[in-house]
View 1 (cartoon, rainbow, N blue to C red):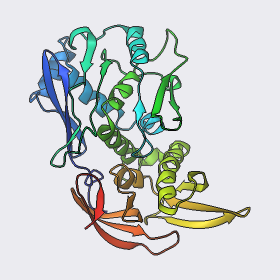
View 2: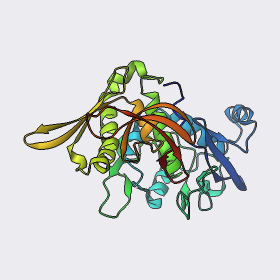
View 3: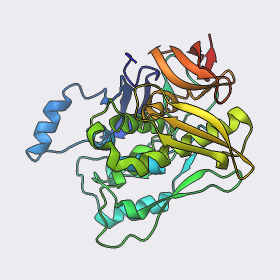
View 4: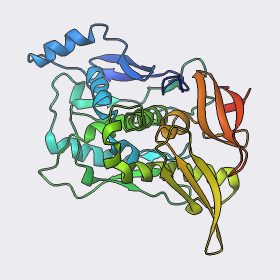
Length: 327
């Protein structure tokens, strides 16, 4: 694999409230940048010396700090149908736990996302898809205790939710940064998840200690492969088992029988999450994609399976603005 992990992602952008106006935040080439702050480094130096910071720079900084945070995989979306639901009341309670710690933020510490469109540049999604709506409290936090964040399984027809429970006066509110990042909407959620997965893959900065995170990474892989495999084969996601493949090749996906029950057993590298699942490449044209040979948005050359145990076939695919299709 010679392409960078983000090569199958298109750029996205949105506006957030900053000062008295709306400023552009743009994600491209694996980085989130405050496009309306050309001297971001200089502003950060002044802030470190006691000056005011800004929501744009705080958001970009939060992205950098949480781009290897396994909690993003623990509570982030599992598939394109997952919709994270946030309680404004819960977010306000977290904000109130520490007060407005950032005098450089917009009035009352509120970042308005009501008019902020998470837009796929060059391929805008139809209708209102991809828009982030609502207002969310922000006070320059630097983390919220992992124990207080719980993923809430959705009821039928309900969005996937986050619950903030059990926090006390001594809460580590730093995790609120991660909540803020997740409120930016699905396009940013998947890109953040991809960054985290890459950081813990064989190519990433934490490769040397990824073994210590095997349980978390295995859970992340299983939770995202299972819905894809279920749609691919028409099976219950509960019959899909996944483990981390540490070899040089892509791994294996096979069928097995356990106690008379059909099961799907997969061994895939952590990079599958970053390079394939996160950019929406898991299923294309009835195939399960298992490896990316080359990618340059909006096209990619991939290896894919027609069924478990089959030999991978080469496919050329492209993104048409709504999803990946065979070229």
